[in-house]
Length: 111
Image 1 (tube, rainbow, N blue to C red):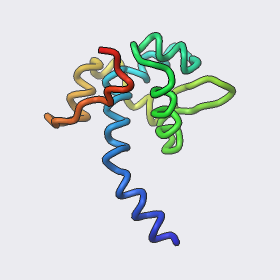
Image 2: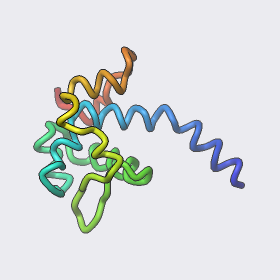
Image 3: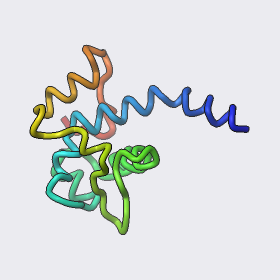
Image 4: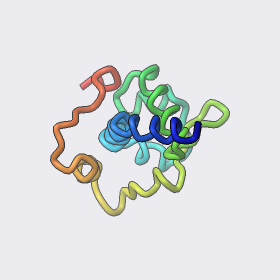
């Protein structure tokens, strides 16, 4: 069954990169740099709806990108790799997409 699991991870790669793009585009790591926030607080700060953002955060936390604990979201070493001092949010999202035609999930973004 390990082969099936590995195949499922590979097949889900596109969805994972979409979620990483959304996280970078919305600057989630930047918002969390000051400390843990609830999903509702993070949604308000990033201009998103809480329910779809919660699904994205749960999925990314399974990969270790964010940490969900006691109703709060926080950065991990992986999400902190989006260092605000190194690049602006728009530079990070451009870096992540590399001139891709990917657009963020419309159910997350209000813009």
